[in-house]
Image 1: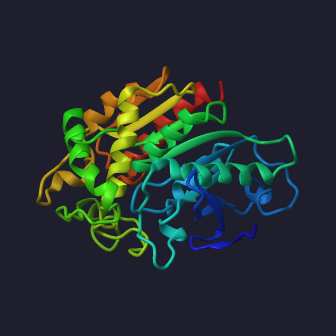
Image 2: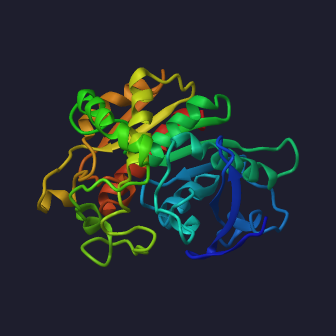
Image 3: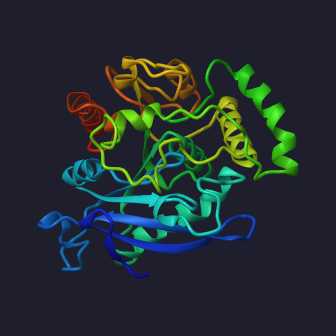
Length: 330
C-alpha cells in the first residue's frame, strides 16, 4: 500500500488498491485521506502522534469524484480522520478501456468499501480501529445506505447528502422504468440509453461556468457519463430495496435542499435548488432507511448541499454539527 501526494495538494494523500467483487472481478478504487499540516495532521503524516478516535469515509455520487477540500477540513476540525473513496470507474480510479461510472450491480461496490475500511483500520495499532461514520452523496448515498444495511455493526453513524433513494415522481414510475430497462440490462448491459443531455447542475457548481468549484471535467464531465442499461438497472434495483424498507440500526442524517427545479431549459431557480432529484420524494423515502432518521431541509441548497452558496452551506454545516452533538459526541 503506497500513499502518494494527491491531486488536491500537499494536505491530501491517495492510494490505489484492488478489491474483488462478489463476481470475482478485481476492480481498482482509490482511497484519499486528509493530512493537514499541524497537530491534527501529524499522525496521518506518520509522526507517531495519536490518531483521532473517529474517522469518516465519504462516497461520491455518480459520474463524480472527491474534490471538496472544505468538507474534509470540517470533519478534521471536528476531531475525525477524513477519508474519501473514488470508487471504481470514477475519478482517480478511471482506467483506459473502461466505461466511466459503470457498474452492473451496486453490490459490486461492497468489496472496495470494505477494503477501504480495512485500510483505515490498518493505519492504527491492532485492536484500535476508529469509530466510523459513513457519508454518501447522491448515488453514493444510496450505495452507503445499502452497504450499512448489509454490514450492521461497522458504521456508527450514517450521513446522507441528497441520497438518490427514489426516482422522480412515484414508485410506479420506478417500477415502469425497471420493466422497460430490464431486457436491455440482461442482454446488452453496456448499451447506452439515449437521454436528454443537460448540464444544469454542472453549470451551477463549476468555476468554468457559474459556480465556484474547480472541477476536472475528465473526472466530473459536464453532461455526466453515458447512461448504460446495466447501470440504470442496478440503481433501480437498489432503490427498490430501499422502498421495501431497510433496517439500518445506527443514527441517520439526511440533508436535502428545500426545493427542486426541473425542466429542459435553464432557469435561475436552479442556482438555489436541487436540479437533479425530487427532494419531496427523497424526504418520504428516507423514512424507509431505519428507525432513527433525522431530516434536514436546507433553504437555497443545491443537489450537493455542501457545494451550495457560502451562506447556505454554512447553514448545512451548522445543522450537521448540531446533529453530531446529539448522535456522535453524546
